[in-house]
Image: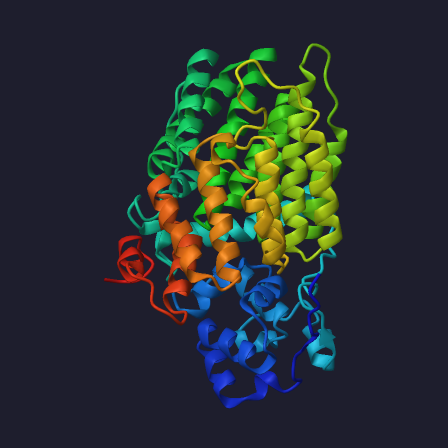
Length: 472
């Protein structure tokens, strides 16, 4: 394990004239650059302090993303020890007691502490969700400066789904069989990484599922609730891929419907996507605890194959491992990955040969190795991840979306290792495998970062223009 020097924030950091001007203008790009210049912090460290993904920090610093959300501004102010008043925010966090105000060292990857109630605390979850919904409503109404929700579907596949959260489409009840067929088609769109088509299909699917549930009673209503939950699970997966704040609303609705279904399978699906949303908000510790508890609570029901239960546990453990790694908890992440690997080895092979799992993720050994790559990379030890690249046979992954995820993880690993040639090779493989995947915000940011690193890679600029990472 690599050692990291403690991050020391100068007590007068925000007294500089240029910093004051940037804060007054809410020029977050200049603010983050100033912080990194005087502390030596990496974008990953800034992400850990503020609860943002490294790709989001990079996009903000490069001016590709404008921040208007009070929630995000508050997290940046708290994480970087900025007096709230300098950003025009009400100070309600006691920022004067921030370690930087005391000129104390801030350990890398550990400053984003979680002190709220556990993930199951519905009141806290709804408070956070309400803040996110406020942002999304502003985007959809056109009141914010971030125009993501107004982009064409090819650029923001989640736009139609975001609008439908506040302007629901009308749906009519249908049979459970027809509802299952519609859900299978939408799942197929996600699995094949056709996100624009999925974004258009979700609003009527969700409306139909909710209308079917509302018209049903008894066991039929419970089964319809499971369909509602999984439709919102797909919506959350799409929102997360597009860095949309709407993920809070869709994850919350998925969990409510899953609980009402009484079925542990959609409940596991909903718990997983909610934990991912919480992780992206900087609440990794609570998310890990919730996922671990959910995984432990799974027991095989009478008449249900043991394989389903074991596979659900593996999926939850893998997600918990990456979440722990994102919070800098190395030993926890590695322990969870080891448990996931051992559990995956106990899953009986199905007659079809297809790996078992949850609705949008499988539980194969290849998948566990893939999560080792992403976890070790986010922990800052990508060299430890290299051996696992060769352990993953892409043909063993469940679908196109999972192959694209594997290629994305390897691209990030090579990029962190400074190997631009292999990074670009992985990016081109993503484009060949899943063309819409390279247009995601995170991949465009990675492409732009690669473009501005030393060295020339033939075809990189054309790739960056083609995928929307830079303007033509």
